[in-house]
Image (cartoon, rainbow, N blue to C red; front, side, top):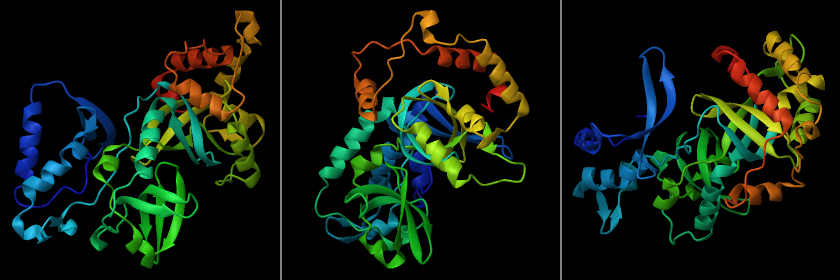
Length: 350
């Protein structure tokens, strides 16, 4: 299991054995997170009753493992003995095309997207953050470590936000997981961080940090994206309908993705503008060959590209299940057809 921070009490192992035993011989839902080449093992999340098993069982773990010695005052547990709170990403399907939108765009190796299918989770989290219980428990000093999730009162957002501690030194670097935005605070202000209520711990992260597949900065010796390339990349996302294909999970922190903006492959736009090169020369050749065989316009198929004037239209469309799905644009159909014709290794580059 890909869960960290299990209780180390003596009977914790027995508790997890009892939790997993009823699953033997039954169908379970798994999310494959990463694979260890050295051990030839997969790390997975187990989904039970719509929740990740770790979140589902945490409260039972606390009740089973904790002893009376863990209680300082009546009705108040010693929070230091509980594992640090952590949030997991919502399950997604690799190689499936999602409609969605970007929340934070910096460079091709630093941007965040939210699939439209998961907007309901975003809305639910926002409502819960507007109605937090009082008083809230402070984050124990022992939990002020990288990987811990907590509540943070953001000055930039002017509200309480779910945050994950990324780095701790003289300052603390916090990732606002529902925005893809980072903030820094002095270490002394970590005393103002709060523990997450259980319902917010159960709600997964749906804002995915991404890396654009198949391109690198232009120039043989260049390893960094120029400011001009970053601005161009950001403009590619502005008020556009996005189609996102998740290709690979990298260390459970980033996803390599392909992105089409209004039916145009963003990687190709970067290359055509001179800001990027393909990571594989064959990729560019095959891309150009496929585009050349596509009709020049959707009218040749009798399709109209209605598009969207702004992001608000996308949000409405993504949550309105009664609206019939429009046929994809011609350029998107040709591109997806080309992906399907490539061998697996070549697909991973795109």
